[in-house]
Image (cartoon, rainbow, N blue to C red; front, side, top):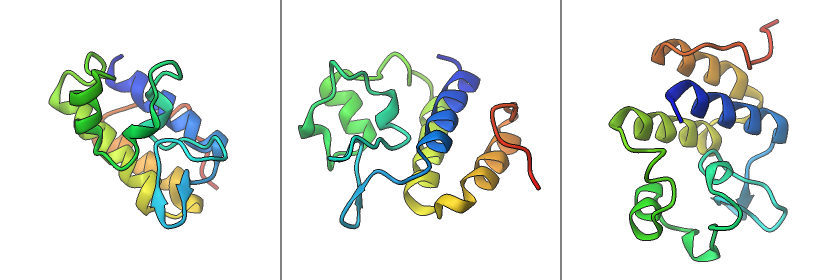
Length: 117
């Protein structure tokens, strides 16, 4: 996947789900409600394991071989980190604005984002 494809897929997922994938105070790749974070939505169902929870995405990539091909460049890893930050640390209501800012900063298209009011 290229940067734009990663951004589009995660953005569409987050804005459709419109809720954080949390259990208690911790964000999860996938929670018991079936919600997924920015990285969790990229992990194929057939390779996801509960043991991945609590590990950094770089550890998951290294230990499980998951997403290694998709995140083979520094730019892609940085983009995913920024998308995870938005999911984990930004209020859901601010996601569209923060995703738009990220896209502009990274030179990505924003056509998958809702129009600003």
